[in-house]
Image 1 (cartoon, rainbow, N blue to C red):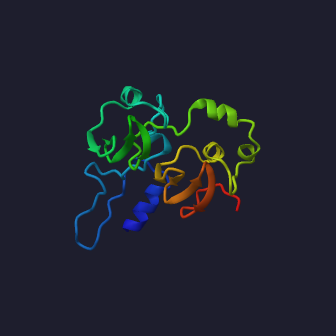
Image 2 (image 1 turned 90 degrees about the vertical axis):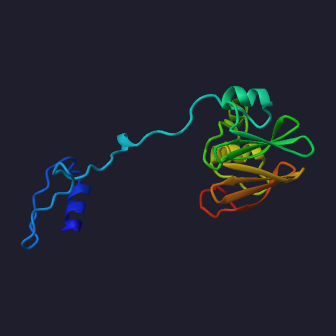
Image 3 (image 1 turned 30 degrees about the vertical axis):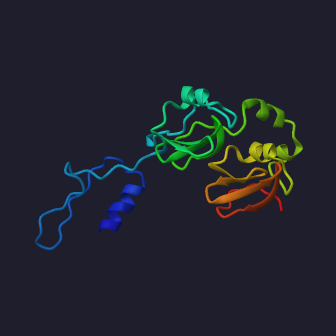
Length: 190
């Protein structure tokens, strides 16, 4: 019976009265306290959580970050002029007052890897127009297709690893040298 009621509900019967059903000598059973079926959320019921306001870029100063992102929940000072700014579960790693790497694990950061001028520059890029990139693609080309990564790590001065979910794109000296398409979400042409 529960399967039938759930199936009936999934067919789009919002707020319709469920018929009382008797199981042997038991009293009738209602789905909700008010004798109605539970409602099924529609696309319009989904709350939009994407931040659409101003964003800062990787070369932003600490003042620019504070202006857009606000005060961090916590600042942890590290040796050699490094700081970790925490916003929820997300982190900005600053070196000498500018962003060195970041992890927007809970999508709290209002960061855009490159500014809008790069997006305009990429409008005529053949790789970006084609919608797929390849080995030796530049960071700008990958950005033009994939957008801002969820996380950026710099394990060495000449190396960056960009994370898109569980997938990664690795750059050396600004060119793509490796990738792992774990989540099958990279638009790459091997």
